[in-house]
Length: 201
Image (spheres, rainbow, N blue to C red):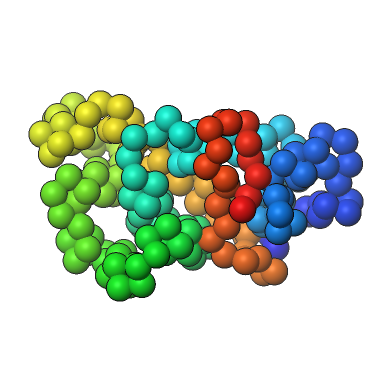
C-alpha cells in the first residue's frame, strides 16, 4: 500500500474513523492515496477538500472529463502511474466512449496531446505541461494565450488548480510509495452540490 504505516478502517478511531466513513461511500474502499494520510487525519481532510474543490466541485465550469484528462496528463508527465491509472479509469467512465478514451490514452502515453486534442483544449494541456515541467518560465503572456484560445479567467483558474493539485497528489504517491494493491480503479466522489459530500460512488 505504501512505504509508511497506515491504518485501515478497522484500526481507525475518532477523527480518522469519521473521515473514513465520509470518503468510503457504498463500496467501503479507502483509496491507498487517502489511507497514506492516516497517521495525520488533518492532512487527509485537507487533501480531500482540495481534491473536491479542484476536480469535482459543482462550481466548476469546465467539463469534468476534460479536467480528468488534465489530471491524467499531468500525472503522466510526473511519471505517477498510480494517478494515471486511477484518473484514466475515471475519465473513461465519464466519457462512456471507448474509442475516444483509447485516443486520449494514446495521446497521453505518447506525450503528443495533439493526437486527441485541438483548439482551446490543447492550449490548456500545453499550459498544464509548462506549469508541471517548468513553472518558473511562465509569464503573463501564457495566460493571455489561454484567453485568446477561448478560456475565461475562471476557467484558467480551474486548469491551474487541477494542475497544481496533481503536482501535490503525484508527489504524495511517489514520495510515500503508494501503490494500487487491493483497489478498484477510477472511483470518484459524488457530484452532489454539497461541497462537503466526500462520499465515493
